[in-house]
Image 1: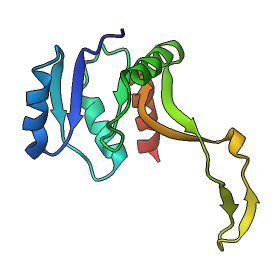
Image 2: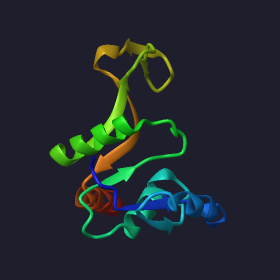
Image 3: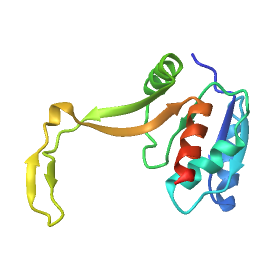
Length: 137
């Protein structure tokens, strides 16, 4: 199993006690970061709190609490191999592309579409570079 050395929980300070009780059952460092107004700001806040020697950052959200340990293991392994990885499932719905006036232009081929989930894993330096690029514009 890939070793998790620290967990950074990005949350309102009023929720911290919930996580402090849970971390007593596992052997990892627990840190906290403040959330932002949007997901990207919260991710950036969490990124600032990680150990500088971390090989990977694993971003997960509370909207998908039932991810299995096997899924986490797989995405972490793939992240170590490729520098980044994400869980996903093939799209089942019919997806339409529309123009600026909401008229359907075409139906997208669902065989080529995936719904992204979490966790999302990335090398910290790659994520930092991404934020640097976004913040330039």
